[in-house]
Length: 361
Image (cartoon, rainbow, N blue to C red; front, side, top):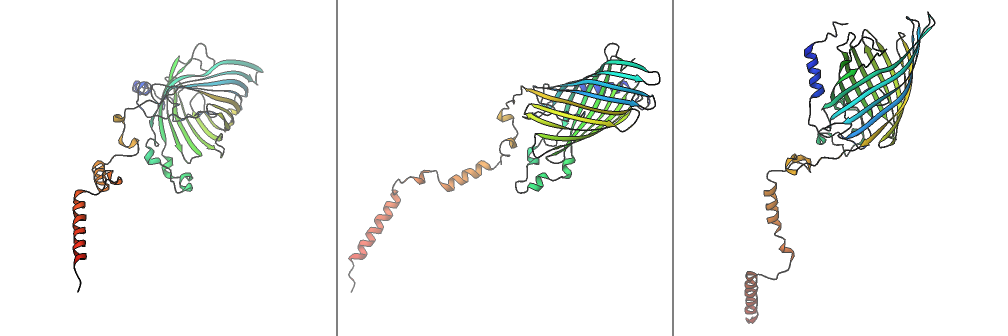
């Protein structure tokens, strides 16, 4: 296992590059809160520049290990603080989980108590690719409801973000005995909108780098919005592999949008293994404080197709030609006959008089 996750200085440099790289981006801000809860998967999109978002919850987790003959009851709280930093697609986030565990060794009738942070992490996430960046390529079909709501192969093309962060182990943490104060984490997050109501998210993470037991994990999450968009459900599968802990988890839950900046949720799940057997559930909520302001862009700096489409090079020539054909606008005003027209009228009158004066025999 250690050979599989062998750590190198070059890998540290790559992670540092991802962690510190500044990007200039196009806005992904939305008017409604976009929360990662109630699952553990992370969206590919950032919250938006100058948006502050708190996602918090309480949970209970029961773990029974058949080989070690132990039982464990855990109560805890988790929190995620997200902030849109500098750019629309760049997000700074903190993730913390504090838990109180009673671990019973049945063979010895001994109870051990653990209380500390099982997760204490700070990181940056940046959206590197967005398939919906070009609105012209994603216009709805105005003639077919089915075309807009059915699954299409192009919908599998996901938005992609990169994450780089650091874990902190402070003091004598009973969950991570002997680990360094700082270890690193890298992740790739993808998000596909399969249909207007179904969203698929995947996370692939390499965690606790520089420790003796680095961890590789993946998460696959599928969420569905009901006809009433304030309600949504999700199902999620997570796999974890390391020398310290390995597991296969399944969870599901429901979320309700109370207001555009407030969401409540419930989730529950279980382990697919018996080393340990796990059953857990949690409740929580997400709240957003929106200080976002759209940045103004000078018209000469805008792309030609941002306001009504690209301008044809011959557009002004065509307009002049059309104006010439239509006239200058004075044709709608009665100014009387011109000099040329008056001469013609006089000649016509003279001819008429001459013809009337002739005698017909």
